[in-house]
Amino acid sequence: MGERKRVAVCDDDQAIADLVGQLLAEAGLEARAFYGASDLLAALGREPFDLVILDVMMPVMDGFSCCREIRRASSVPVIFLTAKDEEVDKVVGFELGADDYVVKPFKPRELVARVRARIRRAEGGDGAEGALEACGIVLDEAGHEVSLHGEALSLTPKEFSILACLMRSKGRPVASRDLFEEVWGEEANVQSNNTVMVHIRHLRKKLAAVDSSQEFVETVWGVGYRLG
Image (cartoon, rainbow, N blue to C red):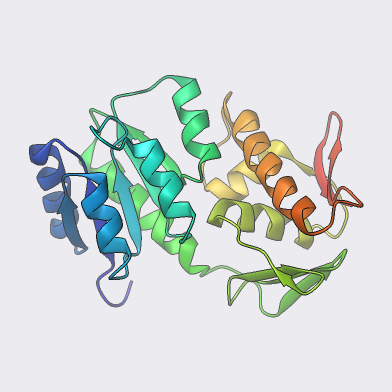
């Protein structure tokens, strides 16, 4: 992975934050622990990180609120690490732009593997050369830039990857299951359709904010989604 990647770990439980930091350091990553959302946000404004691991249940500002603040200024990958394993909490997390959701107690090797995978995907290492163009959208996978009618779009990494996948399909519908496995890099499960649907909804809103005259991402009932 070249130079050591920097990971910010935020948990009000100091022992857990330090433990996660130690696990990541032992795996060759540079980790920095924070014990409150405000300290994390201040640091993100001053220095670069390649990924953020964020607890949900924190005093003063919880993880969901913190993620919302992060997404206002950055597309850095965010992994929620929390004891909350209800589906509604996961949906909220993904709606706010999180990239993954790891439930405590976690397996160290699994956590490290997920961190590495999210960093690799954020780097766009397996993107195709050149820009993709369709429906007034121009998407540069190598530069991780996308625009609609010349106006830059601010997409989360997952929204960007979904749009890239749909553009590569050149108008052919892509099954929700295939989108999930391509973008998340995991085998689809009973929750994957809802996860994809949430991200599609947010992608549509961002496209409509620039041009509401058409629906760029169409639902093909019983099949999946395609770029209109």
